[in-house]
Image (cartoon, rainbow, N blue to C red; front, side, top):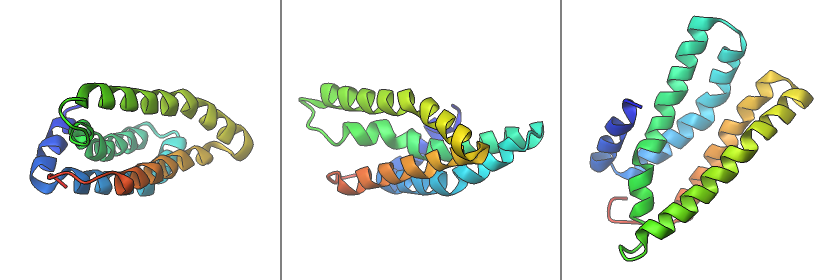
Length: 136
């Protein structure tokens, strides 16, 4: 939570898209490795792996709300962003536990790490096909 405002502020200077792309790539690459570390069951290593995931996710999540708002004209911003964001968030949040359970049952505990690159790829595709703003 403390890192989110810092990454949001950094995106004001670096650019929201650049910050989020770095975050998505790092989540996709490091997520499976951090899941592997967590799966070893060693408390200290698991803590730092979860901390690393949180920091990397902050690179994506910190600037995301401002990035989303800037995609729409001021007249429809709130409704457009709220509806789209909430639907996407609910869909991803609703099915992630189910997908994780199936992956663990069918392929083992390390397969859960595949969720990170999958959603990172979806995020990158979404950022690429979205229209540009003055901050990108």
